[in-house]
Structure formats: structure tokens, C-alpha cells
Image (cartoon, rainbow, N blue to C red; front, side, top):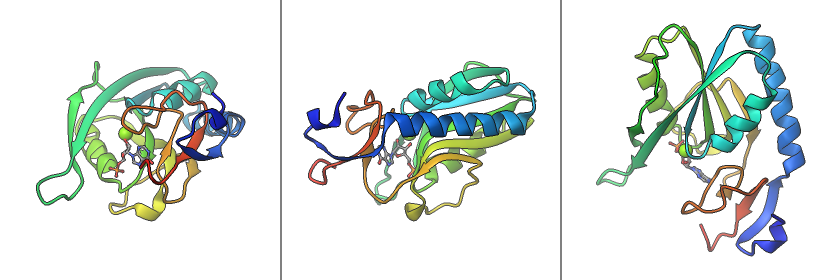
Length: 181
Ligand code: IMP
Ligand code: MG
């Protein structure tokens, strides 16, 4: 979809071509690091699905894929970071080399929760690969091994990222007009 056809968008941050070429680089880096050791990619529903499938198609290391779904909400004081698993993995990750694939890491609360939870299941290794990193808003420091792009402090949509469940199917990443977010 052409972004000029979506009036709620302010500008494109990363084009389809930029995303594709960066994902190829990342896949090559992952192949170098794992040296043929089978990988388990774990995607966090729903935002990471587009990134995970694009990445997986360029990784040559043998891999399996699983997903988990989370719901996050603010507590009564309005502080973020209350996360719960709404759909668990289908299979055990014990002894496996796990790469957790996220759409975006913002404050880091979601990622911290997921890492603590997955680490408790005794994987052989556990690393993080995120499509977007908004480092300027980080509250909880979390280890990110692979990132596609760092982004400014603006709300973005596309390539899996949503605003009220819309725009996930855009092939590019765009900044939403401020009055929308
Ligand atoms: P964190 O716990 O603050 O790191 O939350 C990250 C989660 O917030 C992501 O997994 C997204 O679901 C959501 N999120 C944060 N920023 C954006 C954005 O710019 N667009 C769409 N979703 C976002
Ligand atoms: Mg998410």
C-alpha cells in the first residue's frame, strides 16, 4: 500500500527495500553466530509475526518456530509493566538455543518479563532479536543482541506494528500523525 493513500500517516521511516536489506544482514549475522546449531525462534504475538517470517526466510541455520501471546496493561497507579502470558508456547525450550523475536522494545518491561519467564524453562541459550528499538524511552535495561533499526520517540506502525490493531499489514514502517496516537 502506498503511504500517500493512508492519510493518517505522517511519513515513512523505513521503506520495504530498507527493511528487506537490513533483515538480510541480520540473518547473515545470526547464521555466523550460531554456526549451524539449530535455533528456536520465539515470536511474540502479534506484532513480531511479519518480522519473524521475513527473518526466518533468510536464515540458513536449521530452525523451529513457536509463538507466545501476551497481554500487558497498566496497574491502578498507571505504571506500565504488568505483563501476562495469554497464549503459551506449544513446546518445551529446555536445552534449546532460543532467539526471542520482538517487534519493538520501548520501556523494556515486556522484554524483562518474557526473559525472566523463558529463562526459567532452562534453554541452553536465550538471546533477543528486535525489529525496532526505541532506546530513548528505556526504563528497564535489557540485553538486546540483534536489532534491525533504532527509532526516534514517535509512535510507529506497519510491518507488524499496530495502532488499535490497524496498519500491521503495511510493508513499510511509518510515523503516525500525532493527532492519531
Ligand atoms: P515495552 O514493555 O514498553 O517495551 O512495550 C513494548 C510494547 O509496546 C511492544 O511490544 C508494542 O506492542 C507496544 N509498542 C510500543 N511502542 C509502539 C509503537 O510505536 N507502535 C506500536 N506498538 C508499540
Ligand atoms: Mg508487542
